[in-house]
Image (cartoon, rainbow, N blue to C red; front, side):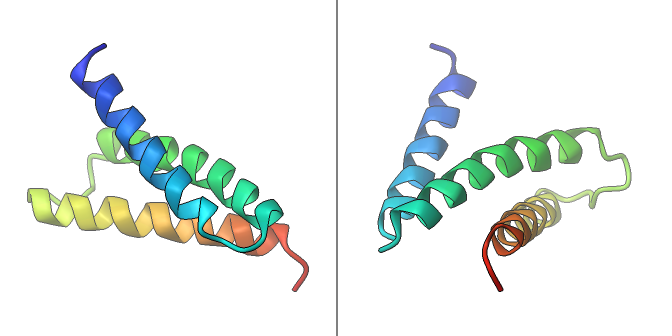
Length: 81
């Protein structure tokens, strides 16, 4: 297993543990699926975005905001509001 694969497994495990803490299993499963998809999407976009901030700290912040925003938006759209 490569270092990247190990990191991905660790990230997925952490996301799954967070989702299991929700009291609603249906919402937890939706959140898990959204988090997995948006993690990959945000990471891919950051890697190919030439306009992304330059410093490592700025890139991490840019990634985190994109990941969290997209995940929460998908979760909001999937629920009755």
